[in-house]
Image (cartoon, rainbow, N blue to C red):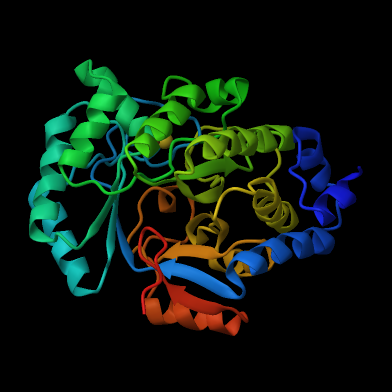
Length: 351
Ligand code: SF4
């Protein structure tokens, strides 16, 4: 059976098939991805009203692509106090957020209790607020710092109010590329194992892929297939989020950046390869809002959220520092021919 026959008959694609999808005409590829998207979601596009908080940029790791960590080209270390975090949450709750998304650098000074206490305080004050916090990379870092198992950390997160896990820290699973761009932090297998543990607790998470740097198309498809295999086992992923590499203020030498066509193809291929993932998210922060809106025609059904403030990608050149207004989001989605639907963190539609 050739590739188009497989696509026409919804046959699961192999690594070689996935690589070959990149050679397909962009519009034709988009049509295949759209067909799958429309079957699942029709013209609905999800967004959520959320707040990102990045409590500290002091990091013991030195990822080559990172512009956020204070030890790199950004010389302004900071750590928010619990009061500062709670004040931010309080203001954002008044603005109508349903989720707080807390991810950070690997700061040896803040410590496990520091995190657990802030989660507990947020949950005690705002029990209705969904806490999405700690990437698998952060969980691994904390487990090493405190000589605890991943499972121990996960249990403590749940006990202290964390509801779901973000998908960060996955970068690219290929071990050679990973060693080059972020050697020293959580390995690919550890990242997958941590999400598996989390899913086995009956909890949901997301998965990311950082692309457009030194990885190959094959590396991207391999990344998707490793996620697809775990999703077959657990069914615990809500969304796959291809993150477009941001090139400013870091130390990674990249010869060629992906053009819009390559980015849109990657969204479409994600939708086709990840046949067991409900949502494909075009995270507007890294793709730009224009490409994120276009990605709706290439399989993406979710544009993430209003976020209010963002430090990690904006440090590397993304135009995201001040988030997006909800009414602006709604208008942009409507004007692009889709139906905006506010969702909660677990993809329940909010009316
Ligand atoms: S990507 Fe995260 S772990 Fe790596 S240097 Fe930056 S803040 Fe630290």
